[in-house]
Image (cartoon, rainbow, N blue to C red):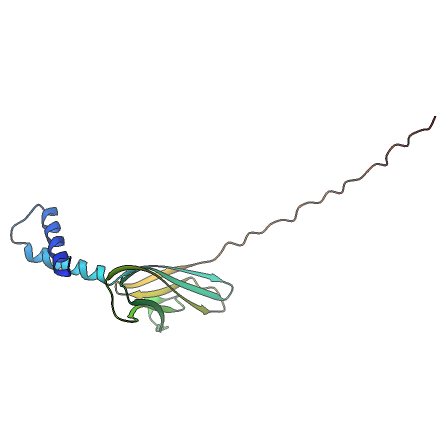
Amino acid sequence: MNAEEDIERRAHELWEAEGRPDSRALDHWFQAKEETACKALGSATYKATQQGSVVTVTASGALPRHGMQASLENNRLEPDDPDYAGVVLGYMLLFRPVGPLGEAGPVAFQATATFEYQGSVNKVLVFDRYGPHMVKVARPRVSVTKPEKVVPVLKSPAPKRSRK
């Protein structure tokens, strides 16, 4: 199935879902085209962790086609921007061709970026085609184990056997 057939199929689904209204064909076609275009761009989920001064940001998801690569690129933030208060660093998720583009995906990917920051990082900002995503930074739980209580075992001397 090519892209035009995908759009037509999806527009028909939208039309039926709305009860087959008259005079909405163009609206359904544009909505289907937009949905198909977004699907072709790939998708991702994000997570961030901090251990000591090292913060790791990970994006994972699906690439739009074979022959592409995903990367997280540093994205400068303006420190005075009130929308991003408390954010230390931002990243941009990029999809790039790395050779001849192959058939349509989805192709799984994982992209990771790390940075060092002295202090606690609460959130990282990642931009993708859907806009900015605030990613809460998780910290590994440190389990504290109490040392086992050592109870000395006192041995009583063995009873002496009497000789007869």
